[in-house]
Figure 1 (spheres, one colour):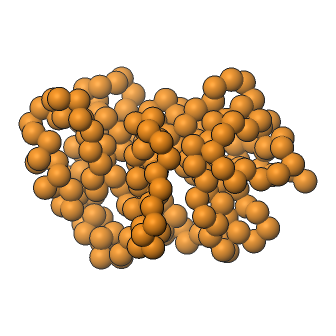
Figure 2: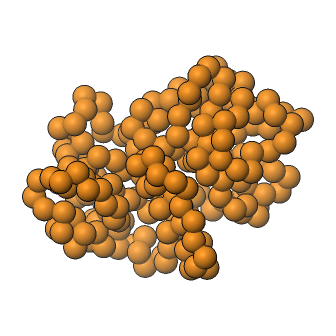
Length: 200
């Protein structure tokens, strides 16, 4: 049985191993010639990405941190299964930012008004280094740790796995034009093609 995996809904390739990935590690895969593999490769240049595959009736998502060699994908963490199809309105989650202050310390916060306090605490000399989307605190911290090349995030708190409230989504969406513009401007000072990389 061929087990396809996807990036942003686009087919990337299929795993060669007969068993589905359930833990972090290196897995061999056969890439498809198409936009899915290309877009995943572009996004990986900016940091870890979230991919998924379907196992029977469940959707399994995982973090890819690199392609260390041809035909091999490095998986950092595999998320718990979600039964049934993902709600398209919630599949990407809320947009998060990773900032690095003048002392080299990193922090993660939500884009928009919810992250104003954290961004202010970073100081005027802080750099925006990465933007990503996550649906839960567990997922956000997993991507954050993977970006910083730390150990996989772990937790015993049930709320860590709960979807972010709809009120948070509404608040973030209400100022989207403003923070999208800020992301494009701040990231443009770091690289030549930043505008869409790392976005949901």
